[in-house]
Each structure stands twice: as structure tokens, then as C-alpha cells.
Image (tube, rainbow, N blue to C red; front, side):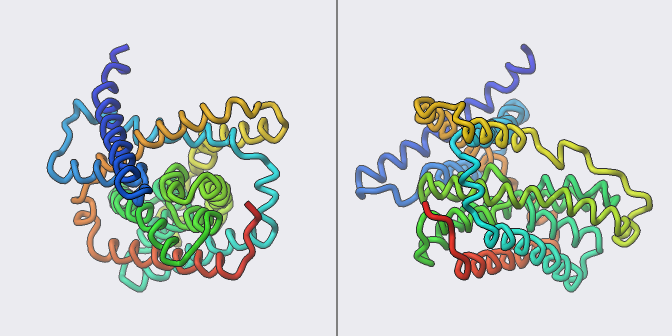
Length: 340
């Protein structure tokens, strides 16, 4: 009970920021006919703006961290109930191969950029994996495989957290500038956004179809983490400055619980075991959880993390993000997407 009570202040703060974001979206719609900046994006911006002028004490910390991670993961898990297996198969072999190709090229290219900018092999690989696959989860999974130093892991995660928010905010803007429809915007989010849950925020301005396709594309990217870790283990940590033999990554990093639940619910939905009547209230729950979580992510952004990461790490991460963005745009422009 004590542990639960410690979460209350931060959760309520995150929920309040999320509610404020929803209020601003409603005001936008009333005054301009439509919400030009969606509530999920506003929640991040309001939370980050508040963090710039006020650093929450540890009284707020547990609830903010819980909202930004656990509530977000619950929202992603529940999203699986709205997606059928047929939607995954509808991606087609071309897009599935393209997703794997984007990950591979972004991984190799990001590592090459890091080495060219003078980063040590382990640090360059951590940044490249975080950018190409799934942000902090990929960094955490790869670190024990290559026996990375704790300082390198902390620096890579710190900058990825900040840059990841920037990617979420940029995806809708780039999609609009490119004239993308909902599916193209969803594919862009799935191919570029670092964390699975953040795909919801990046794709939300384009609608439900964008969210669903983005989630599917992103999950395919996540599934490449296992093979990547295996390949790196076979190459050997000594190639990246670590000591042989490397340790196997924790199982929960290779198969996060919310991805497992997402796939299970998607299977139930595909089998017709989840009735349509539960979908509207379920979507409301997912929206509330995600809105609260996005506010928490904004509140958790530490601008000082960029400075601590160092200019070479910052440049590598930024250029790697540009690289995967270009690769994603090329894939979207040359491949047909499944019909909505």
C-alpha cells in the first residue's frame, strides 16, 4: 500500500497535464474548426515546458516514472485487441522485407557514423542499435551482449530519451509536409520512432488507421532485436571493446511483456474472441492511458542529458535519426502500402 501511495502524486500530476492538453485540443477545435496539434503531442510539449522551469522532487518521481513507462506499456498491450492478424499479413512480403532492410541499413550506417565521428566501438554500436530498433530497450538488451561500460550505457540512454521525444514531434510534421495519407504517416512512425508506445503519439494526428499500421510496423522492428543480439554475441564482445565471453541479454528485453500481451490480444481478436462492442470503451481507456503517459514523458525529459552525452554522441544520434528517416521515406515512396 505504501508503494502504491508513493505513485499517487506523480500519476495525478501527469493526468492533470494530460487533461490540460486535452483541454487545449478542444479549444483548438472550437476556435479553428480542427485541432492542428493533437492532444498527445501537446501533453509532451506542456510536460517538457513545465520541466524546463521546475524540476519535480522525488515526491513526484515514482508516479511520473510509472506513468511514463508502465501506463504506456499497458496502453500498448491493450491496443493489440484492436488489431487482427489479417492486418499483419496484409503488410505483404515487400513491406516486411523493407522493414528489416531499414533496420539493417540504419544499424550499419549508424555504427559507421559513430566510428567516423570518433566514438568508441561500444558507444557507436549502442547509439546505432537504439536508433535502428527500439531506443532504450535495444540499448539495454545489447549492452550486456557487448559488455558495454555503465557510463556508455547511461549516456546513450540519456540522449536517446531526449531525441526520441523530438522524433515523435517531427513525424506528424514531416508526414504533413510530404502530403502523406494516414497509412503512410503510420508507416513513417513505425519505421522511425524509437519506442513502441511512442508510436501512438506520433501517429495519432493521422487517425486510427495510422496508429494501427504504425504499431504493426514498429513491432516487426522490435522483433529484429533478438536476431541482432544473437549476431552480436556470435561476433564477440571483444570486437567492441568488451571482455569475452559476453552475457546473454535478459529475456524480458528480448520479449517485453507488453509486446507478448499485445500479440496475445491480437490473436484473440483474430479468432473472433473479442467482440466489437468492447472496442469503443477500450479505445477510450487506451487514449487516457497514453495521454497521461505522454505528459509523464514530457515531465521526465532532462535537457541536461544532451550536454552530458557530449557533442560526438549527440551528433551521432542526430545523424543516425536523419539516416533512418531518409531510409523510411524511401521505403514508403517506393513500396505499395496495404489498403486501409
